[in-house]
Image 1 (cartoon, helix red, strand yellow):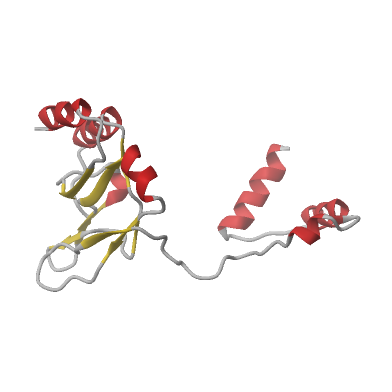
Image 2: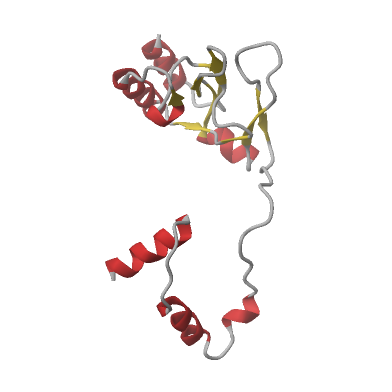
Length: 162
């Protein structure tokens, strides 16, 4: 099935939007408490790569299918779009909605970015012109700092690499 669809997509230089339940995942992080078959994921990823399609990022939920009394989770549903489509529509995203009757969450393609809330830091251009800013940043960076948050781990990693 993938090869005939691959040939069809590669034949026409048009705006492509392929959506639905692919019954495949791209990697093992897209399954929880379910069987993951590496060969099938490789096959699916090769299809996406060969057709130059883009897997539109999804907000709202991590998985799109839930089964066996909320024990098994998978991300099977997705939108794959061509670069031509993405360029003409701009900032697109996929949103998983609430599930009612089906074992799948419905997903919708949106032509706007998802607002995930406040950004963790704000920088005003005027700050970059402050005299001594580089010294302030260096002094702060050099302070002893420990923690398990992602930003702390990143900071520690960067210091160790230097």
